[in-house]
Length: 164
Image 1 (tube, rainbow, N blue to C red):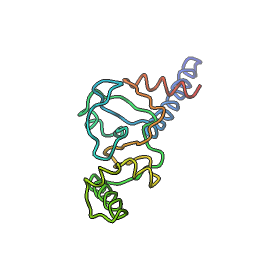
Image 2 (image 1 turned 90 degrees about the vertical axis):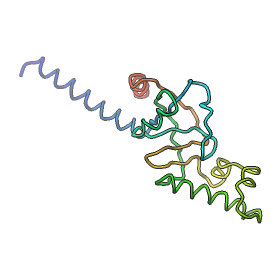
Image 3 (image 1 turned 90 degrees about the horizontal axis):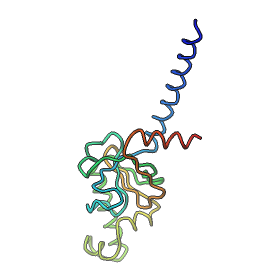
Image 4 (image 1 turned 120 degrees about the horizontal axis):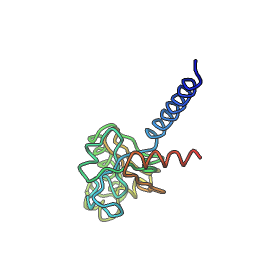
């Protein structure tokens, strides 16, 4: 085998390996967000409290509804409440309202809840820093060190900088 071919195969193997590492990192650490204007709120009310809303990489269509798509790093909550459907999330929200009202000897009353607390406050009191609706969306109530990337190339460059 000639030297050129050996070198080419070695380079291809290294690229394949690093690509697999990148894709694995991306799946674990990156979500998507549709943004009207970077640095400004989308001015959309989140059904599950105030926080940073993003979607999994597999739900690009949902992100696109809110604006231009950005890759987001550090948006995944570290200790979220995980539910498996939008219906489960609604049931969870109703439970939060019900439990709060019971604590103050009130009948179930969303107005009482919203006047005296917030979803994110109650979630944080329970030890959850976010809510994940599997395959659909997530909200992080305490986002830190969030990084936005417009292109896949920018995201890959960031990943490569972490390795160095």
